[in-house]
Length: 388
Ligand code: SF4
Image (cartoon, rainbow, N blue to C red; front, side, top):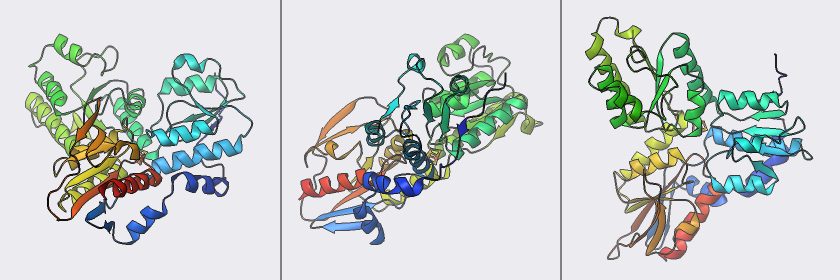
């Protein structure tokens, strides 16, 4: 059955209509000013240094704009989001305030009709979810980022050529689930330790049962480690730590070489770096900021944001770094609420903004790709209030 094509993947041409609303919600004159003045500002003893690249990336900017345009284009229709549009609570709350409903689970899809509009987020949806909404004959506004789609094309090509996709990512992240749904065979590794396990399996040093137990949620149905790890195509979730992705790719290549020899290695291993340029630019910028000797770095972003978590990981290599969601996380100059990298819990830490003597207090600030400048501004304002 051919399904009617009602998927919109471009602007409705209403940017002029929604721009004012977007500016009011997300733009920050203060951030523009700090950028224009060399990415830093001083207030008494406090020095604030912004990373050269931070905040909304091109994919997020586009997805949010399309969501606002969708509301303007269909003022009388019910509009649903298959998930959060991006991982930032402020942006999702603003859309909900405009009457856009977030579908919490599969059961909530049941009431969707052809009169409705469904928006798909920047990180995309699975093939199964796309088909399901196509069958409902509703209007679909697909805001999937082009960089995510290029990962999909990569794993589809691997599958077409009989390669298993090894994906460096988080198996429960929406983007990676969407990517997996496009691969015939896949296994998802979240870090080097899991990649090592795959490598040991390739070399025949890990029992099949042990592999399947370790990756029971993170490999394709019917995955057979004895057969499916002979030809590997490597890809990554767009927001992973690029350094780790390169290391994992090298480990896999070395494992195949150890098992099958150098001859014909190119017909057994393919690699394509699918970290997006926006993620890479933000990771490079946080390293540059760290090298400038900050006393502390604030990394602003939703707690569910993968790219924000990796920025915290990198910043922590230079000085204490705190992942905060918004201005309310800065409870006082003594206490901060934050999320630790890799952990789920939200913590409160004391004595986070202390420096003895009269030397300048140098605070670095960056933000994940889904954080609006307005939120960054509010954090900076709060920092100025409590530090002084
Ligand atoms: S982080 Fe990268 S892949 Fe994700 S929306 Fe932004 S540009 Fe696209």
